[in-house]
Length: 412
Image (cartoon, helix red, strand yellow):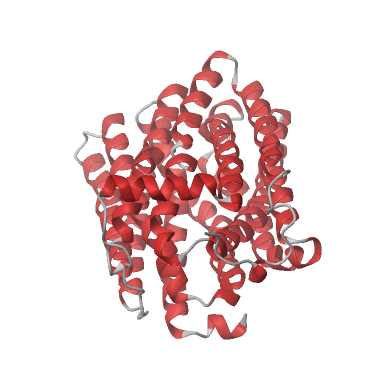
């Protein structure tokens, strides 16, 4: 672990990502709160906004096929950061001009989502060029630990900024973080592998990536598990802030404090993910992480009493869920990197994201509608049960029996 974070190029990229993650935590809290408190959005409109953030992922299949043929993935990561910085920076300006609307919020979410989709497609081959195979889990642990750390301090910082300056002005922090990330990624020097296959149309290359994904014994099972998990998690996520703000009556500062306190467990999960995988096996760790990520949402309707008790329940839910998602993500990301061929990484990750991330807008919309019709509490319980059942896809796959990631090789 020590050798990896002393690698100058990895450390440079890592610092840039850390800044971007902290900025994201501010905007993740600020964007829906702008909709709720400034625009006066309903539960369905909040669901639409959440869906807009992830809707561009539906294009990942084709963006990934295009990125696979680009020789410089690092440059694409820089472009994606700058695109997101510009999109987010428009919100304070429009708010200052007094013309902020839900349409503007959705437009910013869509443009930033396109940048995120491009970044996701370029990241997989860039990561494989930056990090040696036997360091995949370690690198993912370091990057995920930073992400978890941002969930500890980011929401508290975001809540304080929103309460002091207002949610629109707080978005400037996220814009600046994207600009800094672009600068740091630009300083990284890696030897990128040239594209191996220039033949075929974009559609044919995309279709090939999807067929490879669908028939892959590891990737197909992980796709089905992740897609189920993401659908139900976004049913819940579309409602959590609304529930905390309106039903529980918590302020932005209290919500940020609860999210930050709960995220400490996510940081612990990032640090312990590799050790737990060595103890019970990477596959079992992935399954345990999926359950811990989903099940806690059923506890939210139990929050009642004084303000501190409500904050405590919200923090507990975030803690269990944050610990679980780190166990799940770190080991599954490392497994996926190990079993996919270099020449197919972007198109396969694009096909994966089209389904896996593309289901998120649908989950958010369903969450908004069900929250309005059936009530937020029952919808959160349903999301917890549905997400937990996602491990059913792993039972008959080779993932569950996987002990060590470094023993895996790409599958033809």
